[in-house]
Length: 92
Image (tube, rainbow, N blue to C red; front, side):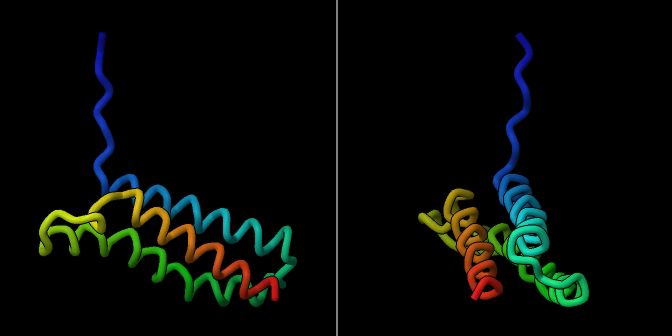
């Protein structure tokens, strides 16, 4: 039986970040009905935020001792909270 290689923590966090960014764009466009001009302008500003949350945990974890903050679940929840926060701002 072949064993599939496990994903690294950084890959998991980057995947959650990418899925949340794509989901955010779909929700803002189709559910909240944000105009394409505003959406394209603001997505350019949001991409660095999602990139930061995909990149920062790997840098943070190298410098700190093992803690609850070095788990991909924690960073995935931070990214989800960011996504829902942004949707809430646009929906208001």
